[in-house]
Image 1 (spheres, helix red, strand yellow):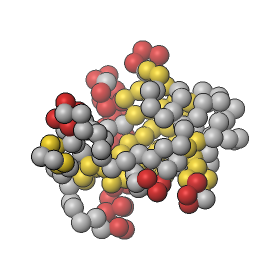
Image 2 (cartoon, rainbow, N blue to C red):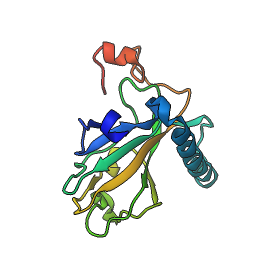
Image 3 (cartoon, rainbow, N blue to C red):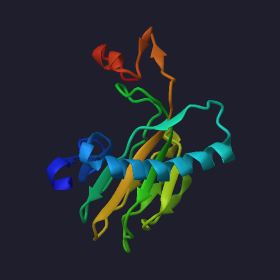
Length: 173
């Protein structure tokens, strides 16, 4: 599917991105991932008790990094113009183990997370959690999603910026 549906990533990272949630033939995989991440959301709800009960996610992206590819330093942001949800967490599921490099680095927190198959890393999407990955000599595969507050939107100057209305009016921040 990566060769058929995958596309070069235009944002902060090199490699190929496949949006699983938008491909009909991957509906079963999408459901499987939904179950995995639902268990994580239940744990977040239990441990951190967010004040809003509507908890969803943005769908699932498969990212393949070839040897030498990186994810450049960036913050994920709570608000993405054109997306109908407000994010409260970013989540990365590592699909393989990388022996050298390929670490997820949070420089403000002085944290380096090794890529290990089955490991899920969850962190706030705020700017203080800027992150990047280091290059590796091996292919690195991950699934990425953002946990969202369903049913909440952000309005700026009377325009809902968490909808396509925000894009049409040129409001991105």
